[in-house]
Image 1 (cartoon, rainbow, N blue to C red):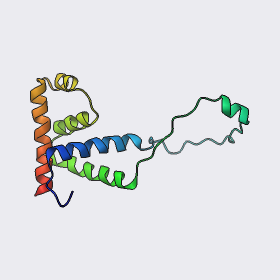
Image 2: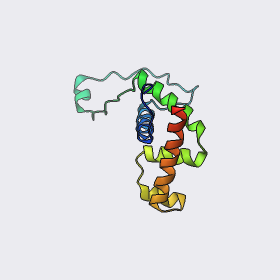
Image 3: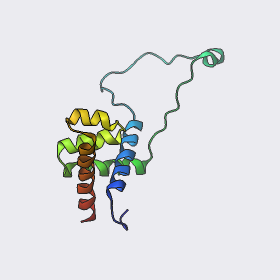
Image 4: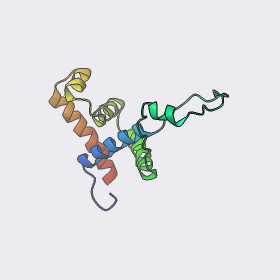
Length: 125
């Protein structure tokens, strides 16, 4: 993106990717707790009868780098704008967002677009 101009849509896509990357990261566990029990050895019959676990897809190094860039960007805007952008990146419906903000959908969309434009203009400067 260094060659072209940043737009509000580019920034919105970047935040959506950052949200998806954040969801793919492993959960944070409290340190200091561990299990000293040995691993359970299961037979092939037991393994076949088990419910299948969903395959965990880990984010790439490039995706994590872009996520860290996005964390730097949110410092350029105010806290209500941050919440609005992250909620929209999480694909929360406009109706729910507008109820939380106490305004109509068009006003919420305008505030979201203004926050994205602030970030895009700062990136282009």
